[in-house]
Length: 257
Image (cartoon, rainbow, N blue to C red):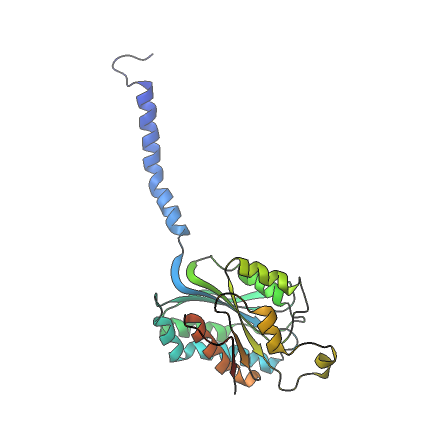
């Protein structure tokens, strides 16, 4: 029974509610802090083709090219010269529509030391070869990688490959879905110095034309063409330096060994 010496029931309830809210506030703030994403200039996903058209030597050249690019002082200088001086980058390989392997998870690169760490992770990553070429599967997978730890002013997918889409859903659907989300799709097409006669007989377009017209898209999107796998290292370095910059450039650039 309530007496004049007892607090009013409404007052007791109010105090209990206030105490509960006060105790819960620090936990809520910690939860929100845990969900906060670290700002970077660019979230960059490197998607590397490991379909059967890429033999062991060519695959080795690809991985060596990415590692060498991140060890290049010009790349580190370009990153540090950005508004925030840092990018977030990850690397995965792709082949069939259901085969994508994240080999190097999201890593913050903000100078020579962290760039060298990323290069070392690329060197240590396993090499495997599969069958088909699903560019659409690679785009879909890449889209799911964004927004996990970092928040970039741009979200960019860098797709390298030496063939056209022949597995998974239509490339146009995956491309449109990515562009609707504001993702920028850049391409690195590796031209075969000795293309197979089968490609010509099948009526397939030149790979550089295909990547330019069917793959890349978004504000400032561009295609880097490596004239053979021997030119891959040069192409990768130039491409990533341009991807972290914001200035205009040609839609198609070419790199030679």
